[in-house]
Image 1 (spheres, rainbow, N blue to C red):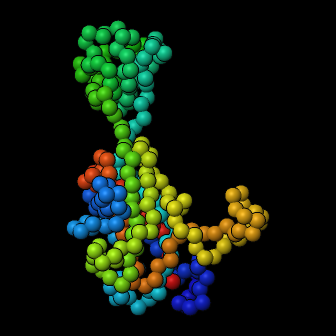
Image 2 (image 1 turned 60 degrees about the vertical axis):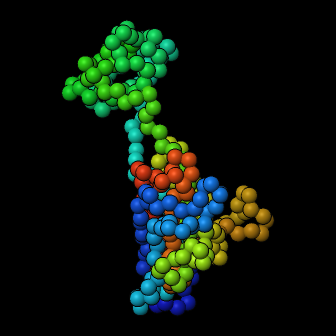
Image 3 (image 1 turned 45 degrees about the vertical axis):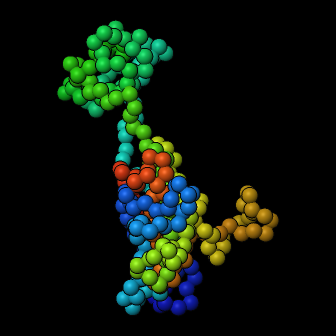
Length: 258
């Protein structure tokens, strides 16, 4: 680790950087006009603050080379599926396990079951039997979750950079768009390394890398930040995320200070 603030290579940092922010209703952009620019009244969340107030005497900037998005909601996978293909299978339920009834026509107690949908077993003791013979209803310890369960919509996050200001004003262009990152539907977390910009310093590698030109070098990815810079992040308000991503997601940034 370097002990001074001069003559540093990109990865010789003085102090490690780890910042995180939870994003829910901090929307940014306008889906109607297909613009990613921050609109008046919007306030993306601060992810990294590289001393925008210029109040530290040991901050000469830094680098962020890892950003991860992790949803705050999670759902258990279905343990058993009851349909024509699985009819007659012996299964065993313990409290908390989930079954999906795809077809009620294969059930023995079709008249008293709650119907097609998802059920979680809440009984105190384990039960074993033929999958089509269970009574999928509250009377037998099965809680009906509905016909739709565990859907996480796709959500887009937009990352911005500012310099020399602690009160960004969208109309004056203080926000600069760094990149966007989509978390696909029903995906718990994503890494942003594929959309981070390339850094100036090549990575040491033994030979050519597939997809690169003969003389092209493999490069680290990340964002260099001068003292006074900030990185913000917001939710693009499209589709079901018009008011943000209600369950929330944590955004993590790692790197180092010079």
